[in-house]
Length: 387
Ligand code: BGC
Image (cartoon, rainbow, N blue to C red):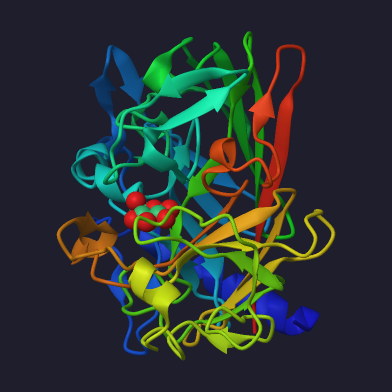
């Protein structure tokens, strides 16, 4: 964007957020072109006591006026206001507006930090060092996103380091949800001045264990509550993906995306092939698959998504070898989102950076083991611009 345009955009954004702050209602307002003018939700909806701990809403803001709201209930990213092509601030995070509503919608993991093991572990068990560990099954026969009481339901200790940085910590006791070892976890959210949200994960253990942390934000780049995401375009730097069985456990194969609806190597709309009679699409009821990233450094984006109405582009950078692309297939319009809309089917998508699902049972996949003395450390970045 040229600097004059940028200045005009920022001025418009500033005026909008000023008027937003002066409105008595904290609901988002629908615009005629079907993007949504974003506002941060009221902090009061996040003040609650759960398991004797206080939940709150924390606000981050960079020098460009980009804002994020995060609650320590499940370490959830609640809102992210970024400028669209006209300079209007749009909340690109789809999700509820209060802790109560997040608790009701728990099964969808809106915005949450996921642990100890993001994605599925087959038949709710794994063997490590010759010992079998049994986990709670919470998704058919499998364990999904850490089990019945994963990190998404925990109240994290929060430390607001500065205006752009929030540090969240949670210690998971030895044996919690069946996993061995005391896992000390810290996740730092940082908003940078190039309009990126960085998520830094770290963890240590006192016994050999497995770990796979991720964030489960649901995005709609036209704004929360602005309708279907099927016209968003998606590009994924992945020549291969991991096909799954009917319960969404990888078969163990690494399959080429070439000549399948999973080929997003060129930007393609999410909806273009989603209803094709492909067996893998049937298994996921749409896209709900792990893509094997060609490279995973913080230098090159591995995913790029464009909101068709807003012109907001999101680039994803990660150090993780995989990414789960989930097209919101199990959203059923049963829960409430910000702006008093429902979480209708496919009105948001998730891009969860991760190690591959069921790795503890798949020796050929990159290992998720963590040993005492080692530090699990990984970063994922979601970066925004508009065109
Ligand atoms: C899973 C989906 C699941 C969704 C919400 C995704 O990571 O792959 O199958 O429905 O999370 O729980």
